[in-house]
Image 1 (cartoon, rainbow, N blue to C red):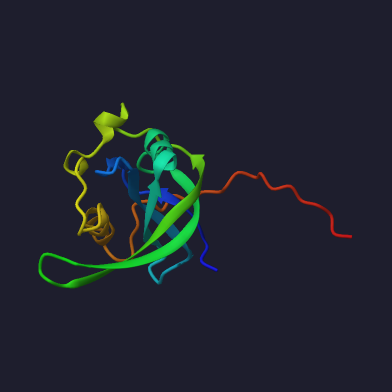
Image 2 (image 1 turned 180 degrees about the vertical axis):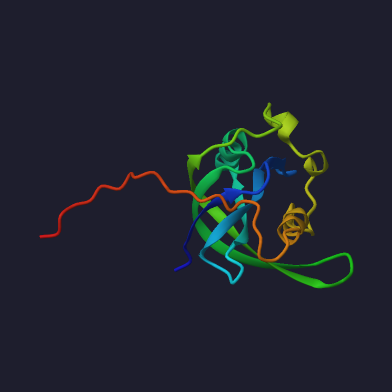
Length: 165
């Protein structure tokens, strides 16, 4: 079984990308706080690359901005490619099947999809993964042991409990 469920905050405004075949997708990094504090007393985070396709990608780009708290369900995918320096790169990402919006932040560049579409991605590049380099640099830019997105949060109480008999 290959199934993943994550809740975290989006690290930057998602951008809609259109491939040459007419398919659309978005990729973004989800910052997920760990359940413990390190020796310095700070909460560390993991940064997970997430990818959505089609209408789901459109909805994420339309409603979510940097800092939005979302829950995603999907599956893990690992792929490899060779970069410009002829080094083999491995990438693990979550392909999103379902998304839940918990706390939304309006994207800074809110506008039509044409305006939000990446200029360099109107024609797909078939070798390098789209957006991986940007997201990886963002995740690596945080000093170890700190997290800009460490605001404590509680999910809304939407569970219904049933008595056990």
